[in-house]
Image (cartoon, rainbow, N blue to C red; front, side, top):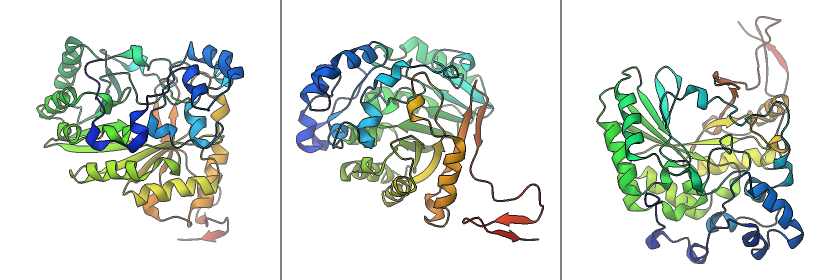
Length: 356
């Protein structure tokens, strides 16, 4: 894994940066996040789904069942696959014309240069594919993917995802960004990452330099709980902003993590305070073994309805559903117009009003 970023000492997260990433049941037990009685379950889950908890994220866990722990500590319920759950819930594989590319929308495509992450979310819709063994696209595969982009002039935006693109070594990321920047019809490059909150020490000047481009570069940070927006994470985000790279966020509505008005409001406020514009709030994708995180759409809509008027519009995300099978995202937020009564709209607290 020569092309993974090495943690740089000048951005050390303090004492926690000297400790290793938790990857095994023994690591969890030694860290006090599990007991010996949990070992068999942890090993069973680990045979199917990868675990990694970097030191900066481990420091956020106050007990093994808190909202941060729920996102990263393996759970026996992950071994239960419900009938509607799928290893590829949004159809990435069927929409991949060449390795590393997913083409779902007319004007944009995903480029997945690697399938490695700083941590492995227990609800991830790509959980069957990511992990240390996922590795990198080879040089030949990457060139094939870039050639595909060159041959499709309708593509205006490339979204670097994975895995986590900010796990690449700066030289590899720079090569990809510069290659995309040299394609005339590419106007926007977007990077999706957990690194700024999961392992902010990785956000070195060298890595930031690798993101430089004359195209519109955007960073979308994945965060699900207000606790993730630590001073170190905020510092990493500010460093990105200082390069004139706007920062958005994506979150997933998760049972036991952010499924109350209070927790969701705290997350949105923390993002805005860090100068991050909330972009998407995702309905959970039906990946195998994630049913215990599921929040029904009606409940999600009710949460957002309660938030309307409580938080600034700057903090308002679009609540979206990724339609199974790769049919794209659609907004599913609360409806305020009454389709049965034209000219009638409801206020955030449910009062019906007329308008012309």
